[in-house]
Image (cartoon, helix red, strand yellow):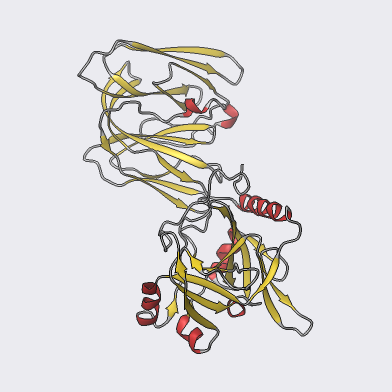
Length: 433
């Protein structure tokens, strides 16, 4: 199959492409592809069929490259792993080539209709591709996916596209995806389809979820960062605090009967976190000034600051989990999840995160003195953020005086963007390799 776009403004001279194929026995085959007609090709797509069992392997080459080499390692191909009405489509694993050979297709600059595509992610490792429209006739939808050093392609022939990806992605990886919507024009020699590209999606980038092992590796990075200063700088804190707008707190007091309710975590911090869009909670800060033992007078998130006594939220009836280690510019942050025991949220965290001992860990812990009194200790070498998964009644906290509100000055935009702020992807300290 070849996806092409007609250009009537000029005649294009015939072109040739060369594909070198190396099989599992290291035998080399040279394939010479010639374009005898006046079309600009977006991509050349080939299906190699093994007639012994009628399995097949998909190969495509971007027409910006005149020559491409493929190594077909049968041990890495699961035969008949995906079926579509056109062919039995098997993803092929490419060897590690230079990055420019892994560009996605479509070199044409002419305007084409934009194909609306959404990627739905569900932990631990389910990814669904959704074209958000219904076609008036059957189309061949060619999906190109690049993850790490792998470039894959599959075809769906239907009136719509709402499919899971037919292969697994590596965890904690950046993925780029593009979809071409094509219409068949003719068939040559009973095996080669010529199609016209009618529309295509933009290049869609997303991050695959962290596995539990990846979360443990991120925790190890955080521990390694902390050890550079010797013992963790743990200090007692009396309050957790949270800054928001006046409108936010007015709504809580007037419309919600004083209840500050958890809401879904945004995509802030690590983009591959299983918490993003899955776990509801409320962010609180712990960092205090070494001289005053109080938070700084400024906030990025709003002019109204709510303080809640830390022991009202953090006690022996809670579990604690490590969730994230990241930075935006200079200072590093650690996110911990504070969740009531025996709750559904605790089951979620237990499945995907690293549990911390609430009495002994380097970020947030309970300390008991010789008289049996509890206090909360927080690490000041990093900014420890607490994501609390339960509802807090602000009115009750103010009335019983285990909480209070004060004004603070805002800096920057003065609020958190709804989508969150992603971590710095270039930091060599808090990013997995």
